[in-house]
Image (cartoon, rainbow, N blue to C red):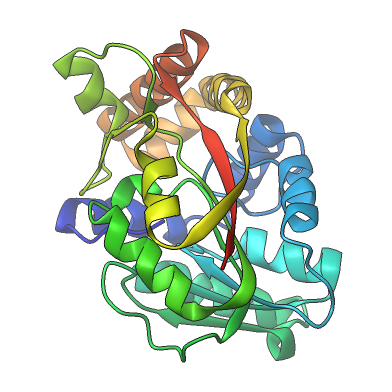
Amino acid sequence: MSGGSEEEANQFDRTYGRFADSIYAAIRSEAFGEDIGQNSWITADELRSFCGWLELTPTSELLDVASGSGGPALFIVKSTGCRVTGVDVHEAGVAVAVANSRSAGLAERTRFVHADARRALPFADGQFDAILSIDAMNHFYDRAGLLQEFRRLLRPGGRLLFTNAVTLTGLLRKEEMVERSYGMGEFVFTPMGYDQKNVVAAGFELLRMEDLTDTVARVARAWHEARAKRTADLDRIEGVDQNAAMQRFLDSVSTLALERRLSRPAYLARRD
């Protein structure tokens, strides 16, 4: 994920620092059904579908924006044989991704770069066949500028796919917004329709939009339950306050998704 405040950096650095611990691997397995090293709401089945949406082949060059610790990127390489460049603002996540790519024997087909996607990225015009950003658009306020940068980086006909799990489709109280954005630094709630408008304005053709909110509700609830079974261990590892705050966050995510007050559309677009 991307962002940049000190609060957010501390939250994500703590997560990446413990990412390989067996207790967190077990929690991910129970939450997602298949642990691919994800740190968002993406499931392995969703990601398999996304590879098809993006038409990835062994000759494709994919940019993964807000790649975190690299789990989904490595899964994509194993699934399609394509080359992946991941960028993330958190150095700890990039370090974990690099280590994981080496241990998986995929270092020749992956590259992970410490970069802030709120600024121009250090790549040439038209360098990529596809761009993917999973559940990270809520960290980018200048959506129009970001989409223009994506257009610059894609070759003509290249594909863009992103999800936005905090798309407003109902009313939220102030307290609910604070709870839902816990520990996330810069965080942007997006009105439904805003992303579609900016995709088209940036010079993309919108090919597909799909509602994936059910995944958020299911994963967040399962994640909450998996952690609840390990409360004593997590209290010791994270601290009582940190563990309780994470549980409140996951409960909030699940509730708002179930009630369809926050939705998670996926957008597929093609550069003209």
